[in-house]
Image (cartoon, rainbow, N blue to C red; front, side, top):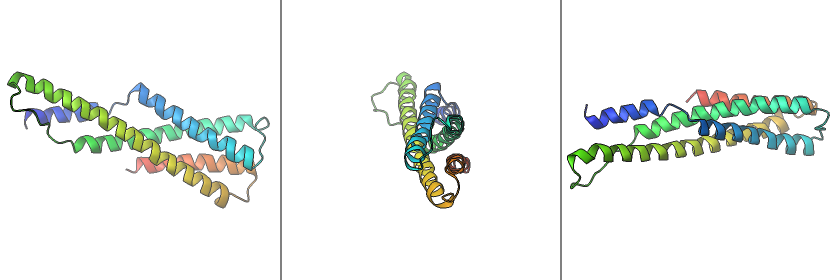
Length: 171
C-alpha cells in the first residue's frame, strides 16, 4: 500500500465521526419536519385542538423528531462512506516538491471530505424528508382515515418516522 492509500483509510476511519453541528442540523430539521405536519394537517385539516392535546402533540413530535434525526445520520454516514470510497487519487502539478506533496494531498483530501459531508447531509435530508412526508400523507389519509383524529395523528406520525428510521438502517 502506498502512503496515499493509508491516508485514505485513515480519512475513512475519521469520517465516521459525526460533528455536533451535524447533530444540530439533524435534530432541528427532524423537529421542524414533524411539527409542520402536526400544525397543518392535524390542527387545520383534521380539526384537533392544540390546547386540548398539547402533551400528545409534543411527545409524539419529539419522539418522531429524534427518530428522523437518527435516520438522517444513518443515511448521511452511509452516503459519506460511499462518496469517500470513490475518491480519485489527487492530481498534483509536476513541479510540486516532494516535501510539499504530502501536505498538498492532505489539503485536497480534506476538501474532498468536506464536500462529501455536505453532499451526504443534503441527500440525507431530502431523502428522509420525502420518505417521511410521503408515508405520513399515505398513512394519515388512506390507512388510518377511519380512526379518530388523535389516534390517526399518533399512529401516522410515529409510524412514518419509525419507517424512515427502519429504511435508513437497511442501507
